Amino acid sequence: MKKSRLLSFLLTAALLAGLLAGFASAAEAESGGSQILASMHVDAKAAILVDPNTDEILYEQNAHDKMYPASITKVMTCLLTLEAVDRGELSLEQVVTASDNLHAGIGEGASTADIKAGEQLRIIDLLYAALIPSANEACNVMAEAVSGSVEDFVALMNQRAAELGMEDTHFANTHGYHNDDHYTTAYDIYLMCKQAMKNETFRTIVSSLNYTMPATNMHPEERIVRSTNALISNFRVAGYLYQYATGIKTGHTNESGYCLAASASKDGRDLISVVMGCEREPGTTGSEGFIYFDETIRLFDWGFDNFSTQTILDDTKMDVGEVAVTLSKGVNSVALRPEGELTALLPNDVSPEDFTFETTIPAQTVEAPIEEGQQLGTIRALYNGQEYGTLPLVANVSVELDPWLYRLDRIQKFFDQLWVKVLLVVILVVIVVLILRQLFFRPRRGRRGGYSYGGRSSRYTGSRRRR
Image (tube, rainbow, N blue to C red; front, side, top):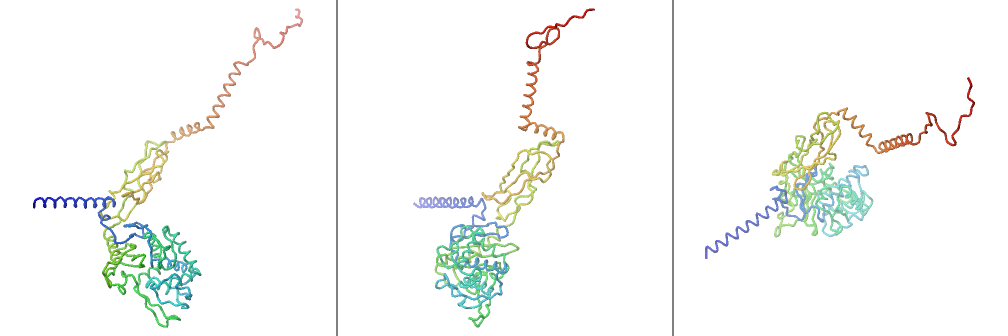
């Protein structure tokens, strides 16, 4: 009995091990053989990690699925406001007045900086209010300052999204308070944040722990606003500070879950991550259980620790093919080589030897002369079905033209032309006609070498001269 139980246990264990091995093999196959890629999964409905300097995606998970962005929306609102400043339509020190419409589209319990109708604030104060404590009403005030109305500004938001390539995004308000028609994707948020992080003022704001808003006509005392990003500040939520964090924006509604677009820089490398649809760990209180901060930190560490820039292809690779050459002196072909260098941010367990290369050579035969470095094709690098870039294929050496072969080829090409062939046929026909005419239609000779003429034969009737 004991032996039977032991045998059953061993068989069950072996079966489970086989299943787990199968799952691991499938995951590894999906990631192209990289254990580093196969090992990563983010506890979120959607996620992405990208190098903004090269647009190389290190990790993506449902990155093009429709999601609700919540307050990450404010990145677009502030980007458009800063672009209006850059165009000279506004200035950071310009004072604007909040209208009675400042709470448009904002429901109960929304984050606020306690801005009141009729309050006069500078543009720079509104930017900090929107990005640091995530004040919803500040977005509507900026919208009216830029476009004259919230409605026109929302149209501008969608126009700018299209310009940035945010193909799966539609904005319905300026702040991200839930609306079923207000959606985006993790990838689109990356595109938006990448553009916003190019602005120095934006970078300064989103990396700030807090900001002091000066007194206004409605607030006689200063207001200190503090960041909602626990990677930057532990004022609201403690225990998630990340020393390499440089921004960007949090978001949360019941419908969106917890969302975070974040940026970090380490050892000269920049990364942008987006996690969306995260839940809070059940049963936690206080600062505990905010998975979206934990997962963002884990994504950043994984990206910084497990990836490096490698050279995939350069001009040292010579086994890329050759092209046949005509009209040349002494050679029948020319070898090709890639021109330039192709690099990529790769998992450390992937090497250039794991790549495949596809060449495109439009003409299999070319005429001399050929200059060294002359482009004759292209070569592209592929890994796991993904293209990592393309380089020109150029002639490795110069090939000299043979003048005699060139002249013969020009003569042959001249006579190969249709009009020349037609002309030659016409000339030949004319010659034949002339010959035939000469043979068959020439005048007939008379007797004794004289000529006979048509009609009756004539006789000589003159008198014979006597001697």
